[in-house]
Image 1 (cartoon, rainbow, N blue to C red):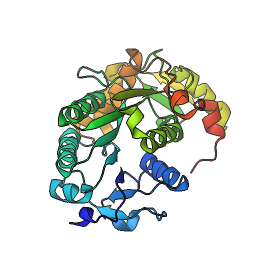
Image 2: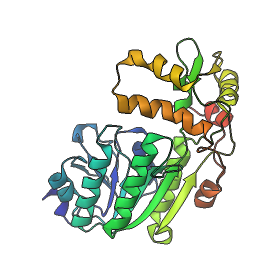
Image 3: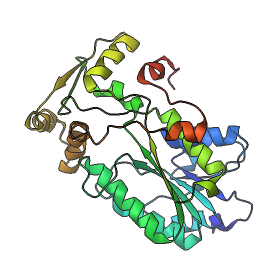
Image 4: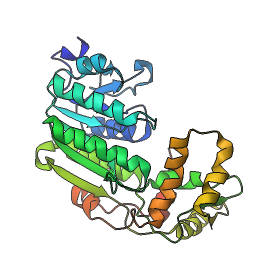
Length: 287
């Protein structure tokens, strides 16, 4: 089996071909940490020192188990949003436990709960529970809404539309999440059993965010609060499956319900640095 090679690093990182996982992999490499990159396509794996690529996917349990042989610590980035994501996660967690993985660091979502308004936060809670029940040690990084996604919420007309009302969120830069993940992965024992809430330094309404985006990008952006009915109607033309439309709309209704509010000190506690505000994030060089 590919993963049983004793020369492979015992730290495994998923998602290295994506945004967050790629940041984590690059930061680990820069810090001199050897890692095993679990990827679906070896040709897309980043070329990093002491970071061999091993091919597997969340949905292929035999390949995942083979790829995870010899791994002690696993950084598990949540899979792409699909209707069966929770089932994929459970299968991958089972493969990790069967392969003898000792500690899973999982990227979850702020306010993950079985009855969360944001539908995908329920999937994250289900994944957390499955990891808890697996017998492996764990650390959960519960990320608030990505600041990186905010500019993408505005349509071509510069309007952010959604039923968030005047609810606030505590958006966090993906870069800050990556730094927290690296801090945990480099010394996982002291973070065993911990759940960290990763937020930015401020609570914002979408109207606040639109104003800051306008100032920071030079693009005129505004927020139009929709009703829930308007939100479903305005997204009907995309032809997306119902579960995905529910996820899109519930991102905003979770804000309206206050489930993305609150400022956590955990990023500073993990990294010794304050998290980026939206204005600071917009001044950063974007990848």
